Amino acid sequence: MKASGLAMALVCAITAAAVITLAVTFTAGAKAANVTAMGSNAGATTSKDVSGANALRPAVWTSTSAAAPISVGTSTSAASPTSVGTPTSAAAPTSDATGQASHFDSRYGCKYGYHQRDQMCVPVDVPAHAYLNSFGDDWKCDRGFRRVNGRCDPIVVPDNAYLTSVGWECNRGFQKDGNTCRAIRIPSHAFAAYGRISSGWACERGYVRNQDQCVPVRVPAHGFLTGDGHDWRCERGYAAADGRCLELRVPPNAHIDDSGHGWECNRGYRRVGSFCALVQIPDHGYAVWGTSDPSWQCERGYRRQGISCVAVKVPEHAFLNDFGDGWKCERGFENRGDACVRIEVPKNAHLDWTGNSWSCNWGFEKQGPQCVAESLSQTLAPHRWPD
Image (tube, rainbow, N blue to C red; front, side, top):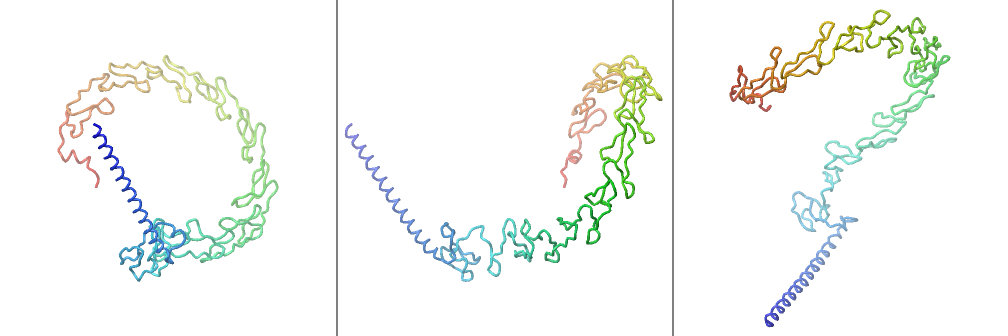
């Protein structure tokens, strides 16, 4: 037992020593490889095409010539010296026939400050007193200038005017007359108004326009000025007539209506000339609002018949309809005269959405009181997908 234990301990010691030796060997090899790579990259970065952040960034050294194979750190094409030994990436600009950058972005097109011309991206020629637009593919004139034949000409603003986004407009109290602003003649009780009004003025509150002057609004007794101040209305309980406000004469069993300038009969009465007459309401009826004659309706479960309300006779397997003045059969029954008869659903059929009739299943058609199978062409035709 002791000999066996000593043998196991010896095996474990030998295994541990082997593992340590392999680890040391691997670390030394990796360091040597890193030193070699750093020396190679240091020699490559001496090229005049690498500078700034590119010298500190890992890169793949390739040739951008389409005819040359990919090489490491060396040039294989004499026609493209600028691409030899230069790190390339997906965002690098392409080159045109002159070897200059085309300023083209594969996602957005020409870059800001350039626009497309003859399948190339050329700089936007911004004239004096202009700036690039938000897209960077055109230009706009500064405030106070307008675009004329590829340049920005100054906007001449006359006296008594001001600049706008599209040109100029006259000040309040002046009106455009050609390239000048002339003063507007404003009558008494008026004021200059903004906007493109033909006269450029409006009357004060309490006055109304009459040709080229403002005349006072004549408000009668029990009247008041409207919201705009250029007209009048009567107070509630009065009606306008011949320029005056006359008091309403409301008869018994009536009240002033919603307008405040008329009257209507109370519920249960109807208008007859200038008074309100009592509505004769039958049993199982009730008064309703409105001017219809008679202005009453029957209770639910009753229907109007002449001047009276008669009970709705609901047969077996039926119920009152939504209005309460008739009946409807239950689902699975159909109306036949004054009764509800059970629906006999044939084979290959089902009750439809109303519940009071039946339809054939898909693939069958109705022929009399039964459903028969359709032909294959008839079955597929209504459900064929469009071409």
